[in-house]
Image (cartoon, rainbow, N blue to C red; front, top):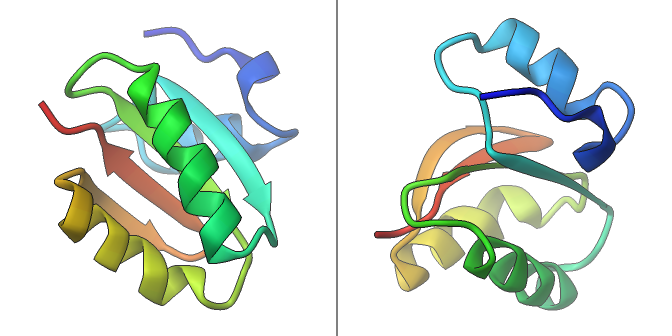
Length: 94
């Protein structure tokens, strides 16, 4: 897979990949401090656009994200591969 800097914020995807060589995300999004309600709606749409099994790197600085994202992944069936706030690696459900 190829790193596409235009898909991620400056330093987001490229720096994460440099530290986590085992998995290269298929897409990435910097949600900034977007709150849970808006964040999960946009996240749901972005994941829907990816093929099953794709990896998605989310950067979310909202303080509630560390609690909300694992619960949202459990409820929706998506896999939370790593949670290292502010970065979360999600595997799209099959």
